[in-house]
Length: 187
Image (cartoon, rainbow, N blue to C red; front, side):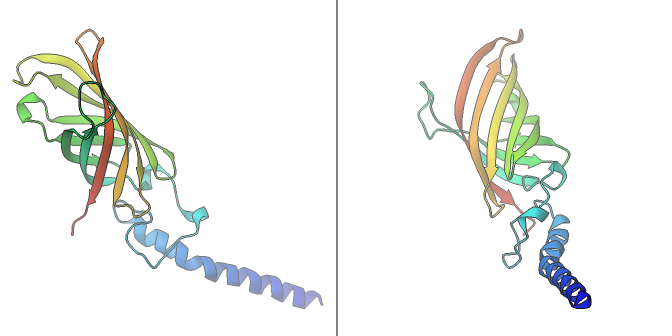
């Protein structure tokens, strides 16, 4: 009787291990790619308990084509494209954007990000604010962004707020909107 119980326990354990093995191997094969997570292989679903949620393997890491569109502003019509560019979210929690703005007005900006829950991130991003001629420094520009990566791992969207400060640190303008982005891959 005792040996039958031991055999059942061992067989049950082996069955569980074989059932979880495909999910574990899918996790390890995807982790070597930038932007690992649910994207990529449609035939390999991983058990939720084994999906690592850390900044080092976060689904947000990688290169994205991003668009910032106005929404909820008194002086800017909803749907107005405010900026487009290429954004890279790095595994170390830093981010850089090559903005579509003219280079003379300061088109590179950087930030730091944190994962706040599964596939959801927040970004604190700074740029140097210049006038349109690129000759007069206005002050730092801060972009606060929240975003959720879709289950496919190929798109994200969320709200943003841009605050322009003067040289003394006083807020002089604020703009709100929605950011959308599409992943760029080597293919």
